[in-house]
Amino acid sequence: MTIETTYTYDTLFAAYRKNSVTSHFLLGFAYYGEMYVVEADYDLLYAVCKLDKASDDNGASLRYAPTYDKKFILLNHGARKLKDYTEKQFKADCEKAKAEHNYNKGDVFESHIFHMHGQPWHKDNRPFFTHPDIYIDGVGYQIKWERATLCNESTLANLPQ
Image (cartoon, rainbow, N blue to C red; front, side, top):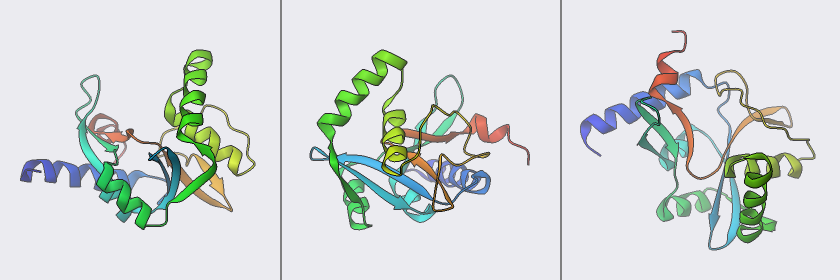
């Protein structure tokens, strides 16, 4: 990263952290055909995100984008294999959800996490600065799947200071 890119990444991440309603995350990823989830805090989240270009002229974005090396970091931070859910099953679920409801991979993964915890799931577009995605044992979590956008410059610029 260049100094300017690092500054932008650090600035966006700090603004995301300041405005997020939770400091708990469930990060999902596929690794050699298996599905994993790891509980993460801001330090781990910072290590596995990257700066990207947001869509529709919204500036830069923060994206959870674990590379092979970053997945190894996640595994070493206690990632759990989803024993009864393979990447093949996940891909089939994604194709079906896309065709039937126009849901994306993040929606399918989030739905699976809800069902794992005995909670009903429905599509929810409430932003990170108003609600967590799920409550588990009274703790609110944001749920993210690979390539998920955490926030972008435009969203952060429009938040109250």
